[in-house]
Length: 429
Image (tube, rainbow, N blue to C red; front, side, top):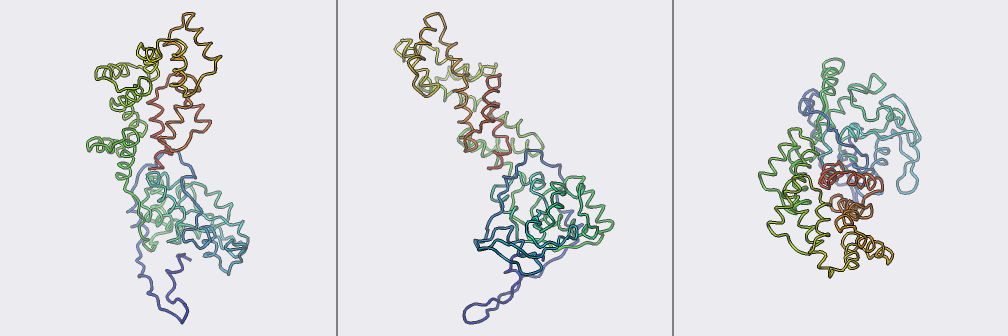
């Protein structure tokens, strides 16, 4: 069965009062598979980290109580299926054309994505929206997209493309590569050179003359449009504004020409504009005011020379201005230090400890830098970056990684750049 939407095949519907004619579907247009393959762009695979969770499945797209897996089981069974409850298929008969196996228990059958999700990610889906990836993972529009096959055969296929894997049944090869090309064409996916070479060898040999119905094209962004959307999101998240035309064009072109996302992200976070935003927020937090022009420029120059944001903030906390706001009182200064850095009130024992340290010669900058590089403070800082940029709290492993990185000398700009260049961040564009 090549189409799964029953409405595509039905020409008569029965309603109360009799039969009502429905217009038949448009006549399918066929093409040689070789021609469809020529319309698939040849590009090196994307190498950013893939996560199966980026493709939401299985879903109940039409709201009839059956998710995509159940829909395919029903559509591809050669006998009427038996169901449990509203939709769950408990038995049927499925012919796995990859290997010729015949199965009657649904648990013996996998629903294979013809072009695996990870292959789709590497071939362009990394630039799609979450909704587009969901639609891909649950595509019932054409029969080539999803197919019921023997579970262990599907597992042996895994993430491989036709240069690495073909169905064990030799009679399935031409159908398999035809469906592969159809799916890539439909979803505007790319193919790497080894993949194209393997397909062309088969299409010039045992599968010469193979034809397929031309599928409707799915709505996915062009690579340039997707990259531009990514750059725009970064600007909005980091600068609270849209990029200027020159900035948008420059970064988009750089990424389109193969510059690594991490390199571009570092270029943005190390910019004077972004560093100025870090300095302004630090002035507001620790001194309760905007920086004067000379002060802003001075700190920018210091950061250009290698000063870290925590070191600058320690300078604010140790400054006569901050100390004067505490009434020039060591005890109140310690209380204000806890409030501004750790966002909490100190215990009396903590106050006593630090007041005594100061009385015994510790300087305010040394005390402040210890607070700013503390695990307690940095955990809050990196969690804030995750909330702002990924819209979620940081996980324990991320906390250990990023807090440790800053304590070992990494800059906050590096951490932020790593987040905005990550597959997770890009997956939310």
